[in-house]
Length: 393
Image 1: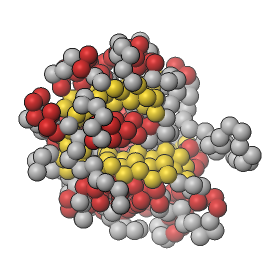
Image 2: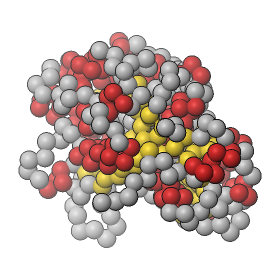
Image 3: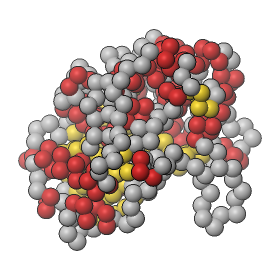
Image 4: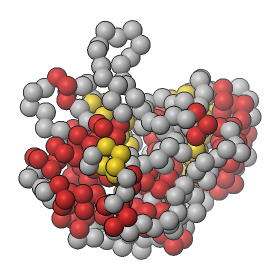
């Protein structure tokens, strides 16, 4: 049995750049923007950083971009790349270094500068040198197939499923309109979502997240040291990670209406955090809504709603800003876009602010536990991370 990380690592500072079309900034500028907000928030000097983990997919090789941008002279820096879980995996590795007693104060930072590249999202997944023959199917098509499969499996009329998906988009845009750091800060109506131009049937424009630029950073230390910096530090309660092995392409009975990696990673995190009934115990969840159908499936995979009942829970407002468990209260990927190497730590930033009572117009009343979730890959084979955060008991 693996050891638990519960209450062994504290977050004492976080920063997040404005997300969006940052034509005036390069990746170094975005890292400086996020890291120096985190330094100021923690009340530390950059020279206090003993080691760093840099999450990025497209915006740099090695750890040197962080060393150059942040002037982290000759400290160990590890670059982490793990598809859409990149930032959370960088955070996870930084946590383990602190929990193991190797370092006292470390930095986890994620960055991605995508708008200049014209990049439109993840493509094929065949590794260099692989003999695998693969179809380079764009992500909207992959998740559109998941939506049609969901409707078929649960016998949901497509018009009803599209209304549920539209409601998820409306909810996230309503939340994002309250977030000054979001890329898109405008509410949309249900009619707008339903009548939006089609991207990949049945997914329309508002069912898909955009491409964006951004960076987010976290300063981590031990709970013992955290008390010397601030009273409202946030503790890591659990982290789970599961990596698929293309089961969806290899198993005849794979159902494609749940993503097993979500289930396994959340169970690991729940076990560490001692969460028994997620819907009752978790106050808010920032989940990987790359597409609205993804948020619907995640809702069920993470145990927030029974199988096939996710639409009913969404329709009932269970996951609204003031609902029983707020999902994507920050606006989600739908409003922040998805600068891949930054998204996971950006989600942790929202949970951190919410737990401190500093989320402004989006603030939940007395939240106790918050969860973040990332999912990289495609239906049939994902990498998934789930992390849970809370205050000192």
